[in-house]
Amino acid sequence: MMKNYEYILFDLDGTLSDPKIGITKSVQYALKRMGITENNLDYLESFIGPPLQQSFLEFYSFDEPQIQTAITHYRERFIDKGMYENTLYEHIPSLLQELSDNGHTLVIATSKPTVFAEEILKYFNIHHHFDLIVGSNLDGTSTSKTEIIQHILHHYSDQPKGSFIMIGDRKHDIIA
Image 1 (tube, rainbow, N blue to C red):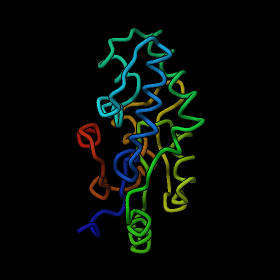
Image 2: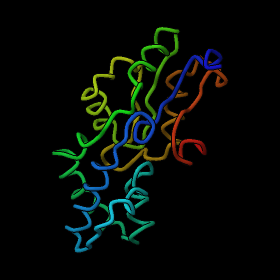
Image 3: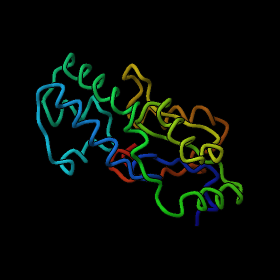
Image 4: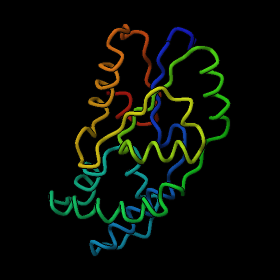
């Protein structure tokens, strides 16, 4: 069935890898720095997928300065430890190899900042399977999955839209 799609867009978190520990502990760290104690890492799973700005607003009603401060704290821990507290799902390397061998062009489409996505893919040694890695900017722009997919479609503007498929684990992936 996949042979109909030349371009396969993959979300990263929750689709290729399980980032729960790294993301939730980094959110927990940020919240603690903001004076909020949250001991239930399962509750913080809702931060996996959507942009951090959106999650800090939705779940903690932070205003813009608080959101930026929380993201700074989050990144302190995430850059040091969190991005490596991540587990690649079983059979992902062989799946990516098989798709590549069958002529598909693989692309990462993630709300995570591109620089972090690139580092994680290198950490798992699967970066070479991807023709393009598109994520958000560190300044908080281009975080919506719709913007990210539009960027990818523009990059491959000579290809028909029917040759693309998005694979993800959250509603943001499907809606985009």
